[in-house]
Image (tube, rainbow, N blue to C red; front, side, top):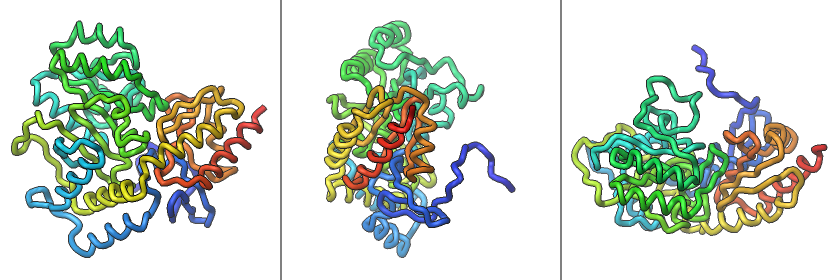
Amino acid sequence: MNLFNVYPLFNINPVKAQGSFLWDDKGEQYLDFYGGHAVISIGHNHPHYQNKLKEQLEKISFYSNSVQNELQVELADKLGKLSGYEDYNLFLCNSGAEANENALKLASFHNGKSKVLYFSGSFHGRTSAAVSVTDNPKIVAPVNFSERFIKSEWNDIKQLEETFAAHGNEISSVIIEGIQGVGGIMIPTPEFLSKIKELCEKYDAVLILDEVQSGYGRSGYFFAHQEFGVEADIITTAKGMGNGFPVGGVLIHPKFQASNGLLGTTFGGNHLACVASIAVLDVMKDENLIENAQQMGEYIENEIKGLPHIKSIRRKGLMIGIELDRDCSEVRKNLLFDHHIFTGNSNDKTVLRILPALNIKKEETDLFINALKKVLESIQ
């Protein structure tokens, strides 16, 4: 049997990782400035993370959600305290797409409505409803398409108001990323988010904040939307939540009523997923990683903003989009193959996406800054 060939692969085979570095099967060292799409939040193989998982493996790895699991309670308690959403409830699942699926379903159960408003440039996942609110026709199959899903332009308050005026009584929820990642590090304006919240309240629609990539300290706040003082009805999270262990979560306002069988999952909230997620929160708190994300992100921006071929820098914390005056693919390849640094791209072909671990150190950022300077200054 062969693999189903859906990923364009670099000819690099990482076999070892520590902190912000990877090593391939040839012994070559690489600086990880992408973290596998913002997944590596506390660095590869952090000692506390490793120890928590090893200790749990000695006890129990998995049982279903038909029994009590005290680790889920500990995780919910720590997540509530660190995020500032202590009065919310937590549903655990396996991925960001699954979190968004459950958020959309829960919203529809809550108000009995079926239409969903989403935005241009969005990416919410590849599963049924999640891909239907993703702005990429290439990955939306005919079976996923429905007129229930309405697209509005990013940061366009006028169109937002017009859409609600036309469909408001049918709109179940509005789903928006705290910061668009795949879309090219696109940041919502405070006025745009406030208007969405206002219209959701007016029309009894649920505000879903997709913080799958922009959450967990990535933006310099626990959740990116918290900078703007907007309170979400439902928040979805994944990626940095487990530092590489598959886990997702839905934070749910107490106004939503739970009932047996309303939502469900086989693997979600299993023992290993919980200890991985608890370890991430422990390290984030003990090592002040949200503050470090703010400081290191600002340092990187200040050091590169004068470099040639950079048109703009879109950044919150360590979620950084470097807009170039050309397609970023060659720059990205040069950084990878000539300087051994992993970076990312986006649907905007000119944007180089930077998503290092939240505990990145100055000397590691300097490796990236110096390499980027050499690459950009070499372009004629």
